[in-house]
Length: 239
Image (tube, rainbow, N blue to C red; front, side):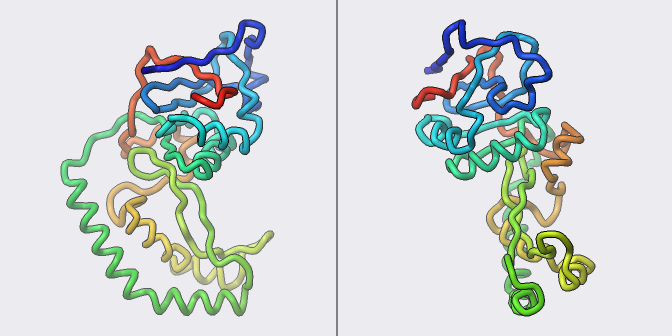
């Protein structure tokens, strides 16, 4: 059963474009555990102070029956990253709300082929990866791996793993050499094993790509929210 928690009239505001940068201003719809995050229109909307802090949003998501979050790329890269970080900490899957593409009838077979190929390749290149880790520890000590948000199949956001090739300010000489031969992306074989991405087929997009394109034609949308879904207020412990 759908639940709608709406604040009283005095908590509603006329929201214009100047408020769009405030995380508390957005439109939320949900039905059957699925939450859709959309930009505002020029209508009265509830202000959501829970969105001003990632900690507050994480707590709301953790105490809610929401099982899946879908977010509109029109909200911008900063808000996409804000929601993605919160959903990751709250252990809630998050997808981009994007147009549905053509379904691939051989997806299960392709997934099996990708898994086998990634496992074989990972076994073959594991000595190379171990050698790179040793070189990185010697010539550029610091973080070994970077985890950046990418958009995968059906618009799902996931962390792509790669070797760190930069310091706080610049790319390292070793990192430049690794990038030249694509060695920094070897850890992404682990993402293929997890099913986050494919060795073949469509590429993975960055959040910046998703915002600029606002349409990822080769990715199938994860779910659609019905037009009658209700607006949701996150100040309650129960969504």
